[in-house]
Image 1 (cartoon, rainbow, N blue to C red):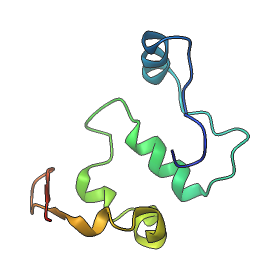
Image 2 (image 1 turned 90 degrees about the vertical axis):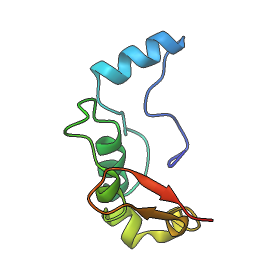
Image 3 (image 1 turned 45 degrees about the horizontal axis):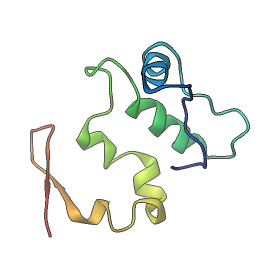
Image 4 (image 1 turned 180 degrees about the vertical axis):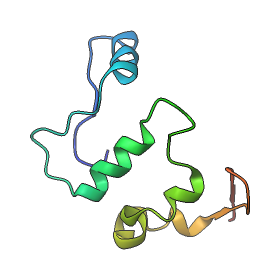
Amino acid sequence: MLYGKYPFTGFSDFEILKRIKSTKADFSGVNISANAKNFIERCLTIDPVQRISWAEVYTHPLIKEEQKIAYGFASKIKIAENQDVYKQQF
């Protein structure tokens, strides 16, 4: 978790999935950066065409400017050119 609580809640997995598909993440009462909020919202976009791509993930300001969050994760991932896939390098 990036900010200490889930962006969607519910009494069952079905209810949580239903809320993910029909509502935006709730950031009320949490203290996270605008970059973090934007990153989470873009990752949770339902339409895959509009959702953030792997290439965009690694160029997003949250990852580039706040590398302490992604330390060790982004450094082990190489994006395949001209593809929306990633390849882990260990």
